[in-house]
Image 1 (cartoon, rainbow, N blue to C red):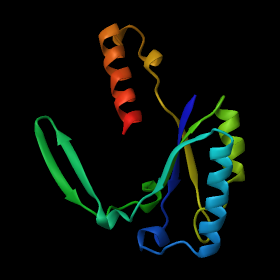
Image 2 (cartoon, rainbow, N blue to C red):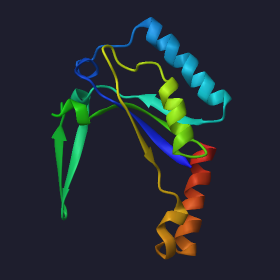
Image 3 (tube, one colour):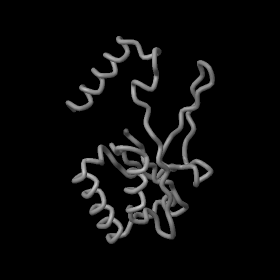
Length: 140
C-alpha cells in the first residue's frame, strides 16, 4: 500500500524559518533509513504558502488566489510517498521521524487510491492509460 505522509505547517514554517543544520542532518538520516528499507518513493519540503497560489473551481470558472493562506494548521509544509505493507508499518516509521518543526510538529498519513479501488469505473482502457502514465513518469 502507498501512503502520503503530510508534514503539517506551523507558524514558523509559514514565516519562512528554515530548519537548523541539526534537523537537516536528522531528517537526512531518517530519509536514508526509509530509502534503505525500500519505503520512500518521494519526499520534499514546501515553501511557505505566501509563495503559493490556489486555483478555485466553480463550474467553468477558475479563480486564482494568492497566498498566504489562512488556517496554518491545515497547510502542508512537506510530504513523503511511502510504500508500506499496511498502515501499521507506516505508523511505525512515522513514530521514528525526527520532530519536523521547532516546538512541535504533526504528520498526517493518508492512503493513496490504487487503480483497483475504483472497481468497474476503472475500465481496461483507463487502466492502460494509467499504466502508460506511470511508465512515462518512471522514465523521466
